[in-house]
Image (cartoon, rainbow, N blue to C red; front, side, top):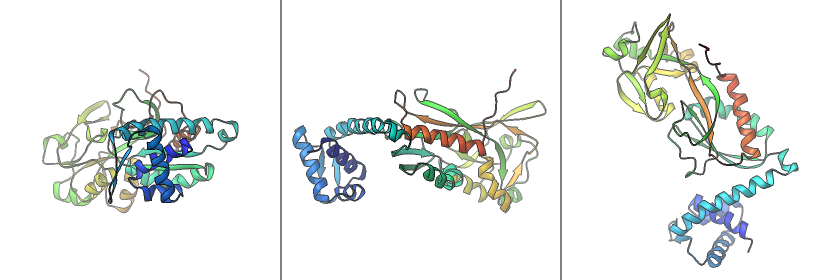
Length: 306
């Protein structure tokens, strides 16, 4: 039995929840996959998986073993890609999680260039705005807007997203056009709320030396950027949006800019990855690519010196 191959097969069965799907993704026969897992269990003298006619569940021992297996396989992959030949052409599987609007509007349209440059990197792209546990969910890196709350992560600031305030024509026809940002806190106006992001926190605005913080009240709060934008277009409230998200609906007339004389603090964009981990060649080139890409859309803003 090839122990590394058996561990690779076991990990894929856990990840897919199926011997058949694991066999398909690994381009092996289902019989070979089953035999390798059985041989691994025999060697370890524990049951790693519970099989039924409908699904496969990992046992407690299997779950603990899986955590160590994926670390070992990742280390092996890093060792291989660190060799001189592989270092010039990074390869392997890279798990990344990014916000849904950023994926739809910026990253995915640009991925053709990334894969042309690094054809041997297999990218597993999670698209969500939820809080991701990088360690438990076995993610190599995440891209997130706002200051990071988990100070244990390694992080690199890759951009500063300019923000603006927007509303749909239907909302403004119904609620009226606010003349001053304070109206969002003290009147019948409503915002669209955003969960788990700085977009859902009080927003600092300034104009000609006047600085204030706006919270607003909402009738709807969501944890997905695309849904957040759709709610604003549907007239459910006022939005604060990064410029790249507002560009298309502004051009189509679905949104109208508000308070254009006011400046909002930009939304910092970070790329974070697990601490105390060697940065593999494939992760390093992905980080460099993200930095290069975001320099086109949201270049870093130098800090203002006092």
